[in-house]
Amino acid sequence: MNVVRQRAQAVLVLGLLGGLARLLAVAIDNHRVQGDLAAMVDDRPIWVRDQQGGGGVLPGGDVGGDRQVSESFSVRFHHRTRPGVLVTYSYYAAVDEESPTTITVERETEYLVCSDPADPGGSEVWSAYRHATLPGGFARVQAAADAALRAALAHLVCEEPWAGRPPWSPEQESPR
Image 1 (tube, rainbow, N blue to C red):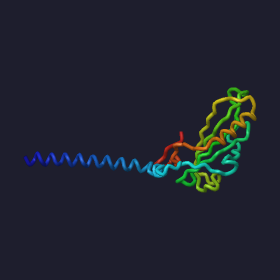
Image 2: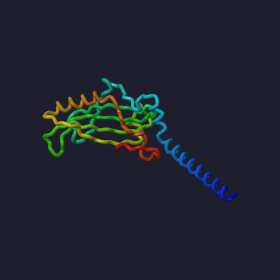
Image 3: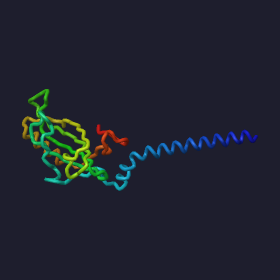
Image 4: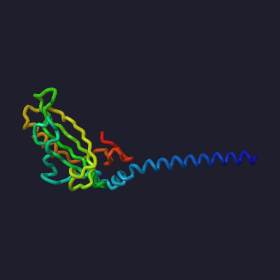
């Protein structure tokens, strides 16, 4: 009877140790998102819109390459808990390469990590870009440029799932 009881106790102890190992694995895995979860607890957004210039919209420069046919308009957001982590949206009129008579509005999304938030371009550590064409077409460049400005002015919230880390960081969620 003693042998059976000892084996039963050993099985229970092994089961308990297995449960503790699973809890430890979950705790280690949750550490990766702990910073973002702490930032979301107080219901404030993780991304904060910079309010420089006219309502937060600034000239964006030449971001669309040969396709860009107007001034671009940019809106920048900074990560609330990670200084030097920025997302910038730039809107501009563009010519469709496959149909040169079609004028559209494109949006470039820039993900940037820098060492000095006051000089992001001069202190860039890492960046990545994503481009998208907004729905609709325009007959004139000026109409598309006006639509690009309206899109930038209306871009009030950044909902990027990016954790704000470059790809070599072990706790990275890459921008899509």
